[in-house]
Length: 106
Length: 120
Image 1: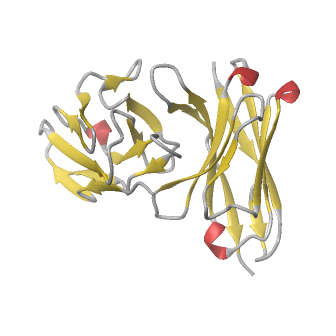
Image 2: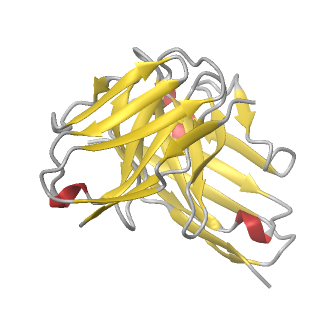
């Protein structure tokens, strides 16, 4: 079974900072990797699909990269409204989510 | 506007059953695979089950296989999750999510979730 390791589990950054989250798959999943944002008490929201494609309507400060086993999600300039938990999700086989990264403002 | 509205959650005793529903609107329901994803209190997201547009393909997470049954009624634009032999560890918010498989596969719309609590 594929394992997804997401890190860090939490981070604290200042407004305007560049934030990077990584997700590592236990085997090659090509670019079959999505990123979601979940704000407290809300449903998840799709941000990035196929590792690097920005979902329609999502601000361009969000980006994703990677292929194979190593993936990166970046917020180029952290905004107060970006406070949330972010999840990676692979779909090479059955869907599997990473453990999540809680992003807070310093 | 795409809308997914879950219902049917509540408090149930261990070993009991519950049926969740997800009412879809704003898109051609019969053209999309649908999924259930759950989130235990304070925990991460866990995919539960998926069903293809015509119900030909159905998949389950190992944690619910043999206890949960996913189904859909395309005439009623509705998705269901029959949950039997419920355990405390099934306590979670259950979301239905639309799956889009164009240029990759992802969950592009989610409902607001319905809370299932398994407790004596």
